[in-house]
Every structure is written in C-alpha cells, then in structure tokens.
Image 1 (cartoon, rainbow, N blue to C red):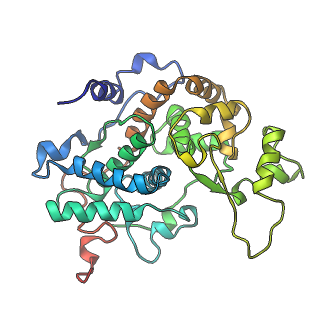
Image 2 (cartoon, rainbow, N blue to C red; image 1 turned 90 degrees about the horizontal axis):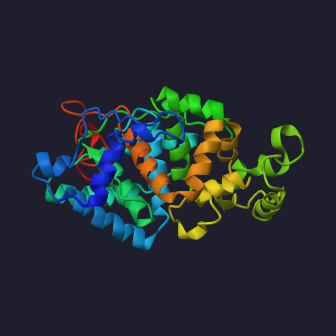
Length: 343
C-alpha cells in the first residue's frame, strides 16, 4: 500500500501541479513514453526488485555518502545523449565513458553490484536503465531529498559512442543551457531544478572555476558576478599557479553542505548571494525565470523537492526503450551479444 507522501508525489509527477506553475512557465507535463509505476511488482515475477535495490543503495551510501552526487551525474550523462537507455554504463573503446565530458564519472561499481544481485534472484528481468534510475532515487532520499516515484519499464540500449557526447561545459551561458535542455524536450523549470539537483552537493575541479577567480572573459579580473569574499575563499583552494605534478584540487559545489553530501536548497541561497562556484550556476540571475526559481526554492525546500521529483521524472522519460525495443542486459557493462562468458 502506498504511503500518503508517495500518493502526493505521484500527483505531482503526473502533472497535477499545472495550476501551480507560478515559479516559471513549463515543467508541468510528464511524457511517460510507455513507463509505469511499480512495473516489476505488477508485471514480472521479480516483485522484490525495488526493495532489493533500496537495500543495496543504503549499504553503499553508508560507506560513501558521495554516491548520491555520483549517481545523479551518471543518470544525467546517460539520459542527455541517447536517452535513458543505460548506454553510459557500457564499456569498450570509444564508449560514452571515454568522452572528455564524462571524465571522473563513478558509481558504476554500485550499479554492477545491484545488477549481480538481481540476476541471481531473477535473471533477465530488471534492466540496467531502471536500476540506474531507482538507485539514484534511493540515494537522493538518503541524502535528505524526497523519495520520489520512479516510472519503470525501461530496456537497455545496444550502442555507446563517445562522439555523440555533447554535454555542455560548466561555463555555458544560461540561454545556451536552456537551448540545450529544450533540444531534449525539457524547459526552463527543468533546467533550474535539475541544475541544483546535480550541484547542491558534490565537487568540481579547480580548472572549471579558475577563470572565474583570476581571468574572467580575458579581463585579468574575477567574474564581477562573484562575491569578492567568496572569490578570495576559492583562491585559497585553487591557487593561480601550482606545481605541474600537483593534482588538480577540488572544491565543493555547495560549500554549505560540503562533505555531508546532503540534498538541500541552500544552493539557491548561495546563488542569490553571488556565491555560486560554477559560472552556469551564477547564470541563474541572468534571466527573470532563473531569479524566480532561485528565490522560490531558496526558502521552500518542499517546493524544491516536489519540482525536482517532476523534473527528474521528465528527464527520465527521454528516449526510453520499452516493449520489444532494446534488451535486458545480463551485465550492465556489455550488451548481451558482446557479453564475455568468462565474466
């Protein structure tokens, strides 16, 4: 039986908030594209699939709380290329994993462990694509977000090509980022919500913020949108020069949550205070919709959580394979045709 919170979230994700789109236009419809709630308990013999995934994610999260931002990044990197078909999980020369934009992706071992467990219980039933989305949902909940409903029934794709990866850089403008989201069928509210969902926790390398601190747009000065005290704070972690053999340092995307890796709305407060780490984050203030989104969510965590549930569900329906399309991989790193029997 569903709890009252899940019933509420289902209503949100189905678009019944269409009368409450005061934050920004759009983001009120969910294209299900063949996906359903509780697909495995209703349509397969693997009725315990979601519970098994939840247990496995909790075990991984208790060892390493940074698994939440790691999985959020993986699911984003997957859905925005070929659609949510688990192509990002495939190994091989020239696969999406090898694209420069995907450097540092991790969390694959957690997905592998879950897949191995499910294959031992009910082989050939649960797709890697669904595992990725369900695991991300559970990781977000453990980090303090709402346990939003995930519509399932995805199947796995056959191809993964690094040349297709066109994920935008963190220095992209707000307008260009919005155009990119629109090319995937998403809108400004999805952009403003998913951006925070990805950046409310986790880390980035100093090379992505160096220009904002020292030479923004070749001016020889910091980004004038960045609070000067915050710029000096970042400079302590990201010096102007460091030894060639020194690893590129990292900084927290949301210093407020820091190493706790908690899902919270303080990210938006920092944007409003001109203390965003990445340039694209500070670009919220470049549009009226961005300002509205940041202002609303900075002080209303429940609103942020609800809209995040809707936005990630919308993203999760991009280019899905259902029915007879795609396959159910035996191993998430290989298509069934290329699965090495010795593994």
